[in-house]
Image 1: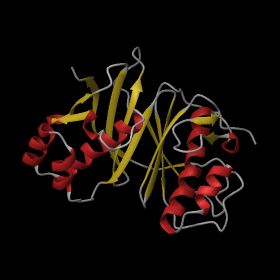
Image 2: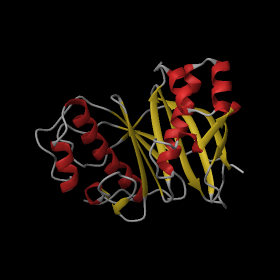
Image 3: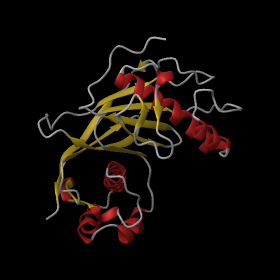
Length: 253
């Protein structure tokens, strides 16, 4: 099968979205790696469906970003942060029960999504894990939506810099008006936050120092997979998105 012809530049991040579907397969599809098949076999219910859909979406995103046929696209085993085939692409994955998102680029990146109407017990989370500066302006704003934006920023930052949540949530400080300060002095880091399909979506990526810093990532909503999750190229479908903010992440001194 010929691969897609509209390959994207690895210098500009791409985001691929797909609505989760309430379908499952009795056995892992043949295109999965042994690691993926073994992982899927241990999962049940929602987690199994999310895993299947996200693995399908990763291959679709890699394919459309690189111009390689989907069946020849493969992420690394374990945490899917890069590609095996084609090589040299960076990946990031986020999903909920309703939407999956995959980001692709040639440089490190991280993506996180949260339902825009979610109203968690955010004050308790902020008191325990956020810096005094963050707590001060968030409590003054008293706005769950602002908290969701801060949370997705921190999650995307940790994914982009290859770290887990434990002990690392304050390595990115989000100040009033979403001024961002991180602990990575090397390279140019950029954050883009927007809303789409009812979700807050935040991408953090390491940008080219000689590129246009103000470019938003390309955002594409793909049609859901067929019943058999075949790797035929997925078609884009209509979507709309609204920019919330875009910032350079300054290095903390």
